[in-house]
Image (tube, rainbow, N blue to C red):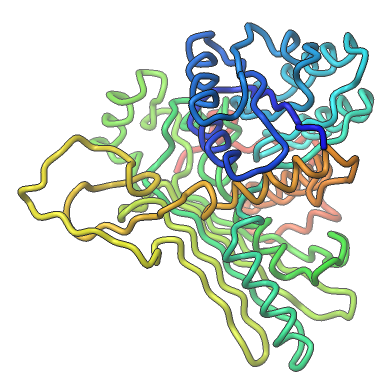
Length: 411
């Protein structure tokens, strides 16, 4: 079988997670990387080579990489404000090829708002390129296996599940642009709620059923700044990320909660509860999931790893993330995630996308699914701003821009 040669747009933390996960994926190599600086692109390409993932090399532009016959598919991991420009460059590069690209996959969120989301869908449809929406938490092994057990063993006997909970919490993003609402499109809601609402929907959806088997009835949300607008922490952000990250004058939310009410095809009410935070101080990144039904429940917590280490005060070293993503301490009892790229769903997600692009199948999640997630996020921001529930099916969200994304939000 032909191997899929992947080109990465962006060379940051997330791209390196993807590259590490590809060690566990058959029939693919990394062909190239492009980024805002050639230095960072070359660094990620070197990582791919070190891991035995082919002869990856750095490219100067997105169009150059997309046009190269040695690249078969593109994975987009660049900042959110670059989505349309990147898609246009990919389409331009694809038009120069004798053999079209097999597919384009884009990290969450698909875009910062519905106008941009529709535009990126349109660009790829016009180019005739298959798309995949990269939502790793839907592919998390504990989520996938938990859903299989609940729907296969309990639901047929006592009824479908009716309540799903999903949460993602950590101490804050790595890169400065994540903290800037106008670039990122919001704060923690836009950055991480896309994970949680989509994973909760996935858990509530019957295996093999289409997305529209669940109808959204209402979205109710709240956002707040609990930590990073406090003067001492706002100054910490400036010291770490530069003067442009100004949480006194242009803050983004560091806490968000969202409740999505659905109705299934039999008229049952279903509820998805999602919580996200950049203000969580614990061992590191915490992902938690629950699924509840008439006579059963399922839960998963990424910090319950089954492996931990203890370091006394005499074990002193530099800060890092060698045990867990967003690690907050280097002493005491520390959980260790042995294979983070697998545990967080990256390996299974990429295995699925590679297989689909090689065989011509439509991925389980496409850009159209990413667009629907953006619709939920816009409804959630509108709900938080107006302090009311929002029905996305009857509310015009097409031109809506969150106040956070406009620099106008004041907690």
